Structures are given as C-alpha cells and as structure tokens.
Image (cartoon, rainbow, N blue to C red; front, side, top):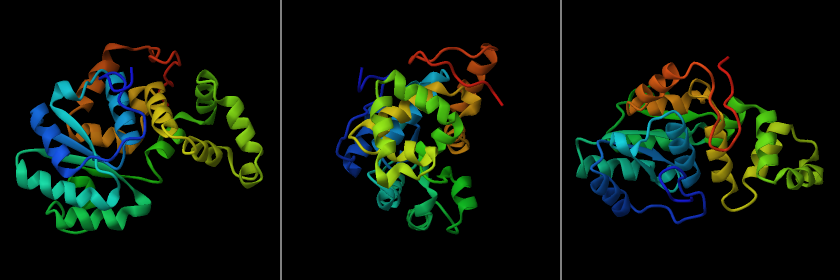
Length: 241
C-alpha cells in the first residue's frame, strides 16, 4: 500500500519544508537522517533497506526529501542547529556536485568542498542519479522484465519508436521513460531496489546505508540467507557477482 512502511509514497508530492523535516525527526525520535533530493530517492532507499531486513524507522533513521540539491545545505544547517546530536547522511547527483558541496560546506559539515570530504561526512555522489545507478546495477534485462510485470512494456516499446528516442542506447531510453509520467520514477526505483540482492545495490546506496549503520542488518540478512530470496514483487534478486 502506498505510504505504508513497506511501500513508501511513490506519487508526486510537495517537497518537505524545513519545519516538516524537523517535525519528522522529532516525531520519530530519530538518531540519524538521510537527506535525499526527492521522493523517488526516499522510496528506493526505504525499499532497499526493507528488502535487506533493515527497517530504517526501527533503527531510528528518517528519510528526508529536501526538494532538490539547492536545498541540501539549508536542511543540513537547520538540522544541525536544532538537533546537534542527529547523525546526517545523504545522496546527491554528481552533475550537481558543486552545488551540493558548497551547501554542505556552508552548513559546517565540510572543511573543504571535495567529494572525499563529503563521503567522509556521510554524503555520497550518484554518477547520474539514483535511478540511473539502479538501472546499471540491475541491467536492462531486469528493467524490461519489471516493465512487463507492471504492464508498461508495450508503452515502452512505443516510446522507443519515437524519433527523438530511437537512436538512444537502451539504458538511456529506459532512464528517460521512467521520468515521463508522474510517479513512474519512484515506482520503478522502488521495484529495482527490491529486485537487487543487498550486495548488488549501487555503491552510493550501500554507502549511505552503512553510514547510518543500516548495513549491519543488510549484512546479517545476507548471511542468514545463502540462496537469493524472491522480492515482494515476484522478481528474484540478482545473484552476487
């Protein structure tokens, strides 16, 4: 069910305000917060953690969609001021890295605006965006299988035949298709996160979960289950490489 703990919200929603983010932290009595650009990132991260057996809320971790990279520093600064003991982590897109790093530096989290400093502070770069990372980790065959499962493959085939998309690589077509309808990006980000075995998650996603100590539960779940288990979507996780 959309909005339930097992299925985070996947529709278009207004971004959080700083006041709403602070309220989330207070209501959850959170010890850590993961800052992400949008709701689709929240859905994918929550799904990945749940699929690996690490419910973030139960571990005192909240996800905060800040409404774009330009807001990252503002939210981080407010959270540090109001809740100094709160551990912060997050994801950002590499294409907007300079904006993200300057914001984090202004918030007092970085001594120098470098990717290495950001990673040390818990903020990790996705080379394009999180959905792109998930497509690369899963592979195009898995993505097309999920499209078929969601009754969207025929629509994707029509999309591929459009002149402006016909010459693009399959990976680029899939990424663009996910962003063409409200809620689709979040929905397929969630499904891809569920389809991946914990050890096959993209490196930035694994890193941010490790930063808030959620990976301990992911590792434990992997150790308890030698064979890959089916996801809630009915698609089996990919084997470890």
